[in-house]
Image 1 (tube, rainbow, N blue to C red):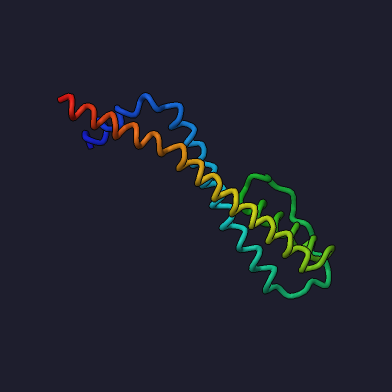
Image 2: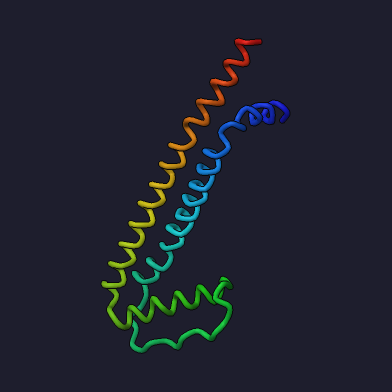
Length: 133
């Protein structure tokens, strides 16, 4: 473990770039989670029975609680299916899923692009220290 901490000490000069790479990795992970989470409503729309009546809206609650948010989003999907039809909602879901996957890939590429000079710089510093020794 001490060896890893010594190697990390050599990366102090790259802190601003490392902060940007970390932020891009957080964005990548966020879009990764959301793109995976969007497949569940997509499959529910595909295999759900047609709606004859619109279900009641969920009772008011904290918007940031997981259950209320899930119920509200489910109700929104059912409302749009009832109003516009299943195929239109599927087109929108496909578009949103495509955008999420594209953004996920874009942020992954940018995070790797930001990390490459850090990796090479730390290796160069270690190599210079080794040859100086």
